[in-house]
Length: 104
Figure (cartoon, rainbow, N blue to C red):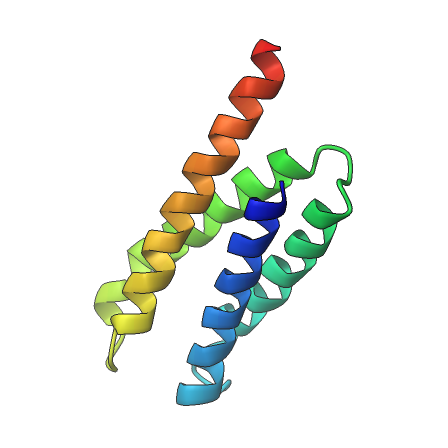
């Protein structure tokens, strides 16, 4: 679970980098997900009940939103692609944790 908290924290930092680099005015979803991922990282670290389901759902929502809007972005997309890959990793790792918890 510590690895998941670290991945979520890195994701929050990457979202913050987008907001800092390109401004908050046009990047409000990034600002919102920065706060969400930071809160999820803290909750995972504290081992809150049912947090894995929340991580899975919110990460899927973030991945879907980024996938649908990445073509409309009129700036450098390198950080967006990195966030996209990190979201996939978070979803896969969270699904594996849930699978092992259910199977046990």
